[in-house]
Figure 1 (cartoon, rainbow, N blue to C red):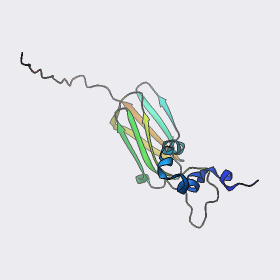
Figure 2: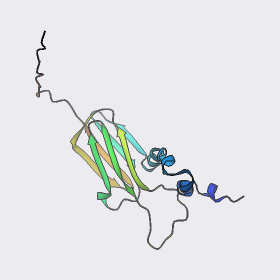
Figure 3: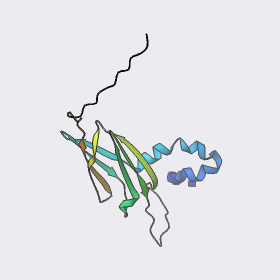
Length: 145
């Protein structure tokens, strides 16, 4: 039996969009987006190496990386369309993605080395150490008796 719905699961969302509605599929967006951005995280003594699989990026302005203490935010768009060709089967997910990666410790936002090569985004992150010389005096307020 040749069932078109079973043949290509990657188009399932589009095929049932009208039937289930947009809000039904919003629950699955995180799962689908995580398939777009598979990653490995490696830890050295005081540094991290994050390798993220993001195929088909030609313009580095299409990827945005933000370091926020111990969260690495990566977003962009994978577009694997080829001029003069029509997509028949889709096994490599594409489209917009946003991925938040929790890091084991805070990293410096001023020392991030990022490279893109062979479909991999390679991020070298350095541990943030507290500034021992910086001391913040805490003001104490007296409460009325």
